[in-house]
Length: 413
Image (cartoon, rainbow, N blue to C red):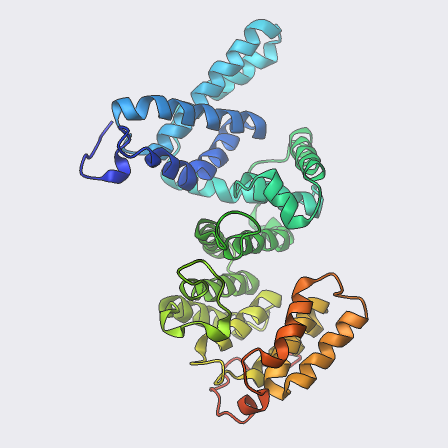
């Protein structure tokens, strides 16, 4: 084991007791994904993960942190699991239990770093297998890939925690009983599996962008992980919607530094300091939007990314090309009719055509009962007349941007 005393992040001798906590936060889900592949069982892998960190708590303060903590934890967890299986074999008298331990122990090679990275992608495709119900795919991914607690996921989906727990248990049993392979699908299988995976990756990003629970409004670790997974997906399958989703997340992420005050309060986009928006992420995201739209095979993610790009390129709320945004929402509504999309369009419409136009749409949605329980609809109705503190007609006459993202309404698959 190698220890660099000058590096506080590697110091676990008691002067910096948060070091292992930091490793747990950054590495535990990667370690778990590899343990699931090696052990072939979610619950056994979870137990092995906790045993590995328990061993780290005992050994690292005494012996120093290993050069590759992640590989150390994988190795420790695997051998803890083997020990546990062999102990159970001695009392169960079932030969297959001992055979399981022998099979796991036979693979003595340490996983390569790239292999560990790919394990998270394998885990997502396993959690999103078509044999599982859609709600189970999302819950299982948020639990196993992102490490959210059952209670956190239950709150996000507004269901009782026991219901959510049963959903996860049934999904794990289905994977085990159906012997669903732990692998990334073959290229010819990918398109059919992609939609649910993209949905889950975006949900992971949103949980990081606007956390449903916890002490902070955002969780940059989850957003960063979702972006990393989208990059991996795009390398495997450079489809327009994968590109569109990556662009959408990058453009949202570019505003992270401006979204909250030093005290942690949320700042609306119109009030954000655009000087601190990340221009490199905007440049990359905008380039990906153009690539997705050029393909003429773009979908909802590409369109949402285009809307976000128009916002990102505007020097101020007043100089935003609201007409183009309304047009993009029109196409999005044709592609995926939804009261939430219509609500979002109404905000842009209020900025382009005046608050009365937007309010008419919101009132129609509320009186029609479509969004009666949706708090953001009531919030939009309350804020719309004063959303940007000036009449939207001011914006309509403003000279706006080059409309690079304008598309024809039939220009999509």
